[in-house]
Length: 441
Image 1: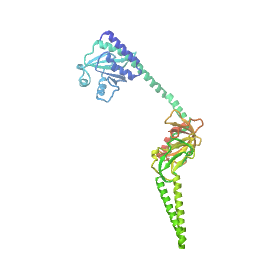
Image 2 (image 1 turned 90 degrees about the horizontal axis):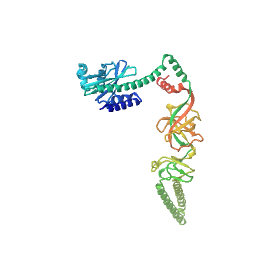
Image 3 (image 1 turned 120 degrees about the vertical axis):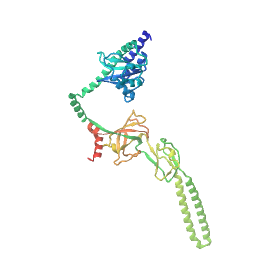
Image 4 (image 1 turned 135 degrees about the horizontal axis):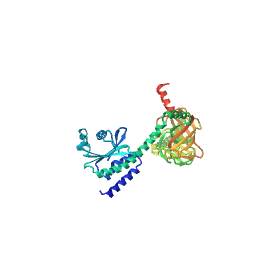
């Protein structure tokens, strides 16, 4: 490589070193990109901490594992490096018996040690380069020139990092400790509002329940979930196959009873004793008529229609079709979109003292950056199991006027604000509660 090309490479690597934003980037440049100036097989960087040289970077590695056998041996070997601030060339043939075995196993035969010095000439660290060929005077001169820039950059970055820690340590000097402790103690008396987070859902506050009018099996649905309906629209119907069979049997039984009554009346004209049978036959006719009327009434109640306008709220239709229901069992709800509110399940472990009209903020999963505001209107006194099988208090809140009403059924997280308390109580409320549970005090 000629002088002009060496100078170009040198300037490029120096520019890389000057552009480094942090120590890890500078270390990577030193042990890896120096190879473009003078080839080598391995490189390792050591930083001086007290009296020890600590291995901090190695070529080809993102980070150094100091527990590896190579790192352990190399760190022990580095403690015997000369620290006079000059460049030194070492050869395996001149190594002591103590170092020769590990050197022959881990490193090539020829090493060069290049110091990293600050502007005052103080040693900051050393870089070791290992190659199979001996190091020439020209290569050492180039490395010395390049490492003068490396040392300048390294000392500046290290001093900046130390200054940051020095500033932080200065805050905790003896003369400032009492001030900091007093400020922290005073901050515990800052008033804050107690709040708690709990899962929430958008519901209809005054929804009308639509129940099964009689025992039966759900047959068909005429609406889909969250569909708008008008008063009189068909919502769903029960399976009427068994009712139709019962209706046909009741009609046939009535015809037979009427025929028997007619025969008894004809017989009564010729036989006075048969007049008593007429009353019995007519009574049986009235019985069958009553049975037929009851079955016809049930047949008319198979179809369930909406009592008023609203939105049909229920689960998937496939969950209901073919499912047996009992009289009065709720199948769906009819709700008004403008009557939506918030239902919150507040776990017993997170419960705080709440008053009606307490502020509530709803953060929807679908729109977490646009919280909705509301006011608490109802809180249960007794805990029940939530849909997640957690003992919780059931809370209901109404959206404030002017708030954009979300779609019924959306879920999210609600923040309920309670009374004003001191910051110390806010921070230590739960630890104190757990301590009392554990200690019984």
